[in-house]
Image (cartoon, rainbow, N blue to C red):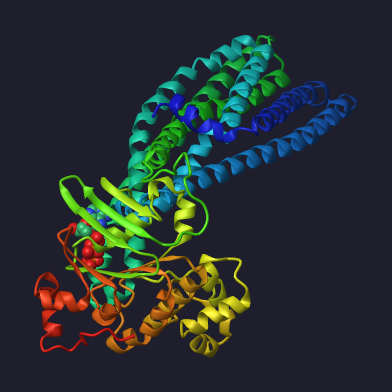
Length: 585
Ligand SMILES: Nc1ncnc2c1ncn2[C@@H]1O[C@H](COP(=O)(O)OP(=O)(O)OP(=O)(O)O)[C@@H](O)[C@H]1O
């Protein structure tokens, strides 16, 4: 990205604060002016009081110096505070925007990038963009104006001396240009490795139990170590460039200063400049160099920021999987008629996940979707909730294509019970009402009763007010599932999508959630995705998927007798029949 593109893209986030930025820059310019005067007063004190040995010449410039320092200090404080405020507001807005966009991306998005990398983009990269676009604008402008002002003041003191000092300026430019290219590459590598290492650590920690149980600590450690080594190399490459920059500039600066002093001694001897004048001039040059240096480093800041801006833009440009309809065709609570008509979908071209899948679930009906692993079951859940849109075919809710229903309304009508129960930091009560924040305590309790969760919740140290650890590690699998069921009860939607609700639970625990599940499903259109036959006899219809296609449809009884795909999948559990062939409710 060029600097122009970075500004065009990100400067709008300063909107509304532009006046503040201008005001901050003005305040900082007043500070520059006060420095100019303060240095001049020092020349006055040197010539009129120190060299002349006269105390009377001291008071006036001393008072002015003090006054200027106080004024300079005050405006500098105000200017920096304002800049910080604009910078922080910029960060807040950009972070919010990036996060809001990420939230609208398809669920597999974060797997492609890695959570850690997304976190790195969300923090360091956004900061780097800010350093250029918000506070960077003020700082660069002030540095430029300061450089001009101090250069003019030095010329005014003694143009011969000042010109001699400026002669070394092109050296700075050469040094800065040489470094900037190197730093651009180093900065990009460093940002990428930073993302990778965060992802690796995040993955290792998220799968901590498996890592330990499979004795893979050393493999995991090695994985982190390898990325650590890349990080070390990238950081050292960056440090080599930026660490060499400052001393090299410092040496250039000292050579310049010594040259000016030597020339100054000669000028004083010739009576063309006073001692005070020379001191003030070196003072002006002393203030000038850091600003020139800053301007030289600008290229480095720009390179870091453009590398980061590219990474942020990549996120913001990632296409949103589904769009809200322009025209809304329905409103309110649905009856719960769900129809899939010749639905096809593929995550990657040429590898169909679903092909021509059709079935209907009438309001209040219970349809079980089953099939071998990878057959496309969970994909149906993702399409129903519009995480993705079908490539072909239509999904309808109450007869309306769900692409014409707003995402909010659609998801207000469907509750998904995913395979893994999400537990958020907070109390049991907070977790239960996650899907319906306005639920009363009575409603929460009633839902917990119906989900057989009340008893174990009351046994927790502080009942409903017990803080749950992140990811609910202080609950058993069955308890987490019952929390999820109670949460779904509270949402009270006409349609339910249950994705393997008993997966990961042992036989007995799975049986214990059947009662709560049945209570949850009662009266609601339910699509149950499962390999587990516990609820098979309850189903009004079972849809068997095979390689993304509907292989068979029927009741449990019919499918067992049909001796087709269903029988092939579950025959070992049915022959001799361990499952009752007649529905039991
Ligand atoms: N995010 C994704 N990107 C690419 N391919 C995917 C993605 N998610 C699923 N698939 C592929 O799509 C196909 C259907 O996946 P899906 O998750 O729907 O299967 P499933 O029947 O639910 O399997 P399981 O019972 O193992 O959960 C599989 O071949 C899978 O590899």
